[in-house]
Image (cartoon, rainbow, N blue to C red):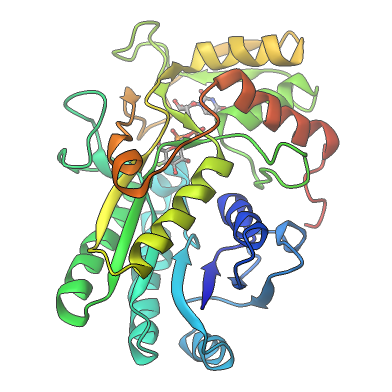
Length: 331
Ligand code: UFG
């Protein structure tokens, strides 16, 4: 048995490959390295560079690795703001890419897939915390592209018996506690790494996008989850499918929300730096609040997140950014 990790050189993918290898599992990684980093991939994993939408390339990977029985699919674009400006890029890479992948998986009779979905599929939630059964009505093309992927998989299950687990992540932050792998996006758009770049003096100040949202302090509220815990959830989801369970979807978050202002405050405490911040106009595509109920993942998958403290999450991110001021330094 072997797990194929698509997007295993990315931020969450690389943490999952690392955990899989730690557990002694056999891992094959595919990554185009367009946004991922070769240095992020654990050396014990077998690596192929290529695009999952290239079906001949994927046929070669499956032919050379006949022991693959499950796929974990991280290889998607994930920036809300970019998706508002370039929606077709998201529908092509994320949604059309999924169809091409499923076609080749069918040819090789591979019936298990765990895939990264997102809190962005819920749009503007009617109530908090968000449950998996709540309505999904995205307000940005990124969320829509992922919701379409979920829907495609439902019909692929019905027709071909392809079993899937959709993991709907909330906001991911932090790095491997030993500082060896972490978050390195170019350009960086996420709140916590940007706040830490200000702490490092790499940016003058933080712009907080909007303070007139329907939240206690007017700034957006998000639910932060650590990639180490996400990695565990993916591994549990693969076990769940290997045991022959039915397709399912799970939220992955901490069930606690922090406003953007609270994140800046927590980062000031962790880093001891001033971190200048100013209020700027809204960014577009941002729901007021996103807080998960992750009870279902705890109950059904047996998920037990270890990082439930925002300062601890920021500390691990700070350790990575401090030891890798230029990220992986490979671009
Ligand atoms: N923000 C700022 N200033 C910045 C960057 C971000 O104020 O310089 C704000 C955003 O407007 C938002 C919050 O910080 O209110 C978090 O923004 P991020 O870009 O860090 O994350 P998002 O909430 O937009 O999106 C992330 C993932 C998505 C996922 C979503 C689910 O990137 O893939 O979480 O909650 F869908």
